[in-house]
Length: 341
Image (tube, rainbow, N blue to C red; front, side, top):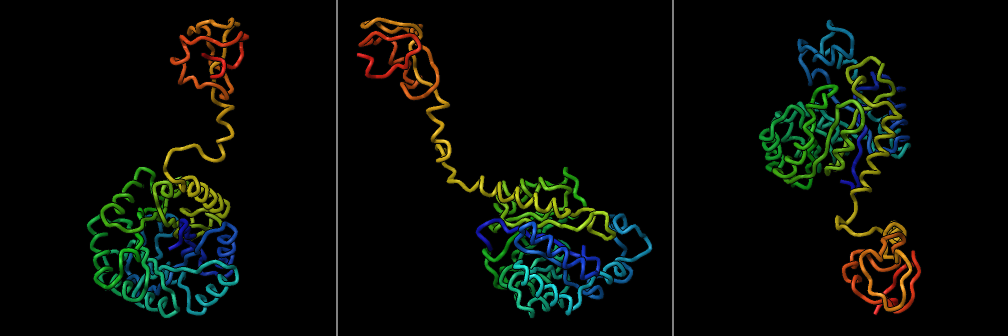
């Protein structure tokens, strides 16, 4: 994994089966400065039965009830030749191609292409044969956990460990599988429970509208952020409506990098290098309120606390009261230790 937060732009099936759109999505991801762009690798015949109905959000976003989930997905498959074209184009644009495999053959296919990382979608977290093969074929797995309980996550991780993966090779993404996810259902602190109980790197796969939740996830310690994006949310397709548009993706990346830098300090509270120059300007010192003669014993009423902070600290005022002055002092004058007996 990367030392910085890994930002994965999920193109998914938002290419609508059109390679021109797929290339444009890669260009948009590059311009946004994400780390990886992710597509989806599947064969509809291996993923869904021909009788399976679409989810409510898929019906809502595709605008048709009559089409089956199989028919919808069949149009969104990427062929071997298309995979190779996309991988090659990503190399020319210096961005990493990544993909989610949705069936056993697709896992083997991505492994045969030479990938060492694989993304496991939420729907496969209870698919034992799939989990075992993923752990055998790949050096690293990134697991989404939408719809899952903590116990189901534990079971999946045990499958990985039994197959030979170490915990350092596993990243678990907190996730909610509703498109878009209502804010009240995000339950972002569950990500911290996963980290505490299971002891792996954590991240967040986001399906909310907007960019604030993935940014908050980074502030809480997410190492990976995954977010769907599209060229235009008005396009027809199952995932466009819950995706970021290119300008929003750029803003999310900028914000994550800012937050990442903001939380990268030592954690020890001390003045930062940039603010040291402001200490004497913003803090205050003890001054003389009105003129006093040499030998005068200072009372509280003789003293004012004013900027700049180049003299005696107001924290020492109780040690100044009752001391004599060595010389005549003028009202408003900065008091120094050399002025006192």
